[in-house]
Image (cartoon, rainbow, N blue to C red; front, side, top):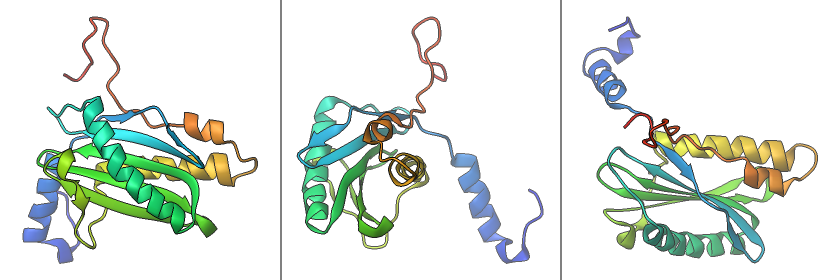
Length: 176
């Protein structure tokens, strides 16, 4: 293990090494935008190894996200948002972010064992590193296409993060 700050010696260093050893990138799949009256949403699905999603799961997650987005609208959302459905190893989470007034966003997280039982996450829980990857991309897309110069909603909608493995010549995605 490389030398580190003595404040992170012992158990802390072992814990960080364990996290580093366990981390693996996860495929991020952009879905077709959700169009509502006065609102556009870019949805994504993030999947842990061995997890599969289907349209029914996305529809259920969309219902939960829509209720949150309606609340966000009442609180002053700007009409643009992102939703991340994350099928983690041992649970499911749903991150709903709405761009709001004055350069802020509203962020809500839901979690559960299945998409049917998504509930507000415990107070203080933030997005995982995989969910933050999407949010980081979306922050950059928002700044580049909405806040910088011309407001180009079409370019914002087209600017998606897609980290799925490229298919090999035999039709099987690489990395599987």
